[in-house]
Every structure is written in C-alpha cells, then in structure tokens.
Image 1 (cartoon, rainbow, N blue to C red):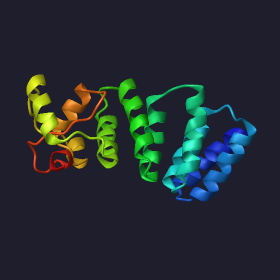
Image 2 (image 1 turned 90 degrees about the vertical axis):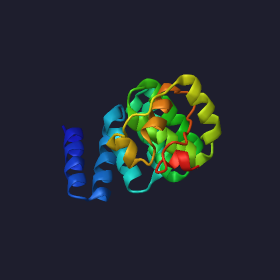
Image 3 (image 1 turned 180 degrees about the horizontal axis):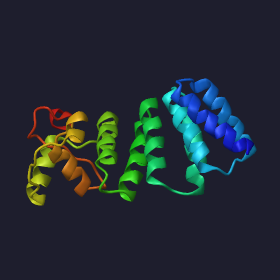
Image 4 (image 1 turned 90 degrees about the horizontal axis):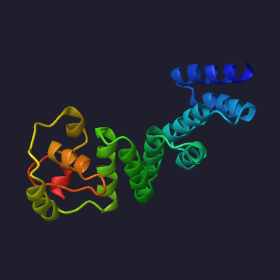
Length: 178
C-alpha cells in the first residue's frame, strides 16, 4: 500500500511540475519494491527530463537487464542522445527499430543520431542505392517534416533498417543537405 501511495504521489507531483519531490517518492517506492520495471522507467524518464542522463541510463539498464522492450531502448537512446553519446544512442535506436520497424519515430531518431555521429551515408552513396531499390518519393508527413528529414529518407531508412542513408532530392532535408 505504501508503494502505491509513493508512485501515485510521484505522478501527481510530476503533473504539478515538482520533479525533485517526485524523484524522492520514486526512490522510496523502488526501495520498497525494486522489482517494478514501470517505476524504474518512470524514474529514468524523469531523470532524463531533468538532465540527469547518466542516472537515467542506469535506470534503463536495470529494466533492460530484465526484459527487452522497444520503448525502453528508445528512451535510453534519447538519454544517450541528449548526453552526446551518439554511438550508444544509435545502438539503442537501432534495437528499437528492429523491434518496431513500422514506427517512424524510432527511425527518425536513429537517422538523427547517425547524422550527429557522422555515420550517415553521403548523398552520392544513397543516389546509387535509391536507383537500385526504386523508392518512390511521396509527400512528407508531419513527423518527417518536423525532424528535418524528408519522407524519402525516412522511407528508405525504414526499408534498410541496418544502416541509414540520405538522399539529395529535398532541399529542406537535413540528411540531403549533408
């Protein structure tokens, strides 16, 4: 019962924009029952949102050591991305994409991390590959537009899950401008 009180109060405190108190409640809840993956997830997410990236990654490591979940890989990748650890971010985003290949959000963040880390291929490499795969250009949905990648890049990224590529067809695409 005390465990539930701490977790419920932590949720309310988060909504009231009082992250320090929410973290204290989540710490107490974990001390009472360290088996709850969702509590570790909530604490890790809150730590990441408050800029405590190493602590957040440690929380996500704990729950990923128990069971693999695309959402957990994704948020650990986000913590690594905002920490500036592009290699770890790419690894987690790749795992999330493997688990949920149709989720464009995971694919977009994978491309962003590879672009930051310098592992995204150049436009010339993609042009030859694009001709072979015969990918058609389609109008850009809002997710792709908001991430500065054109829809063609997102579509090819999803088709070629193992590596990210860029195209040279859209002037507003961060990948195309590279």
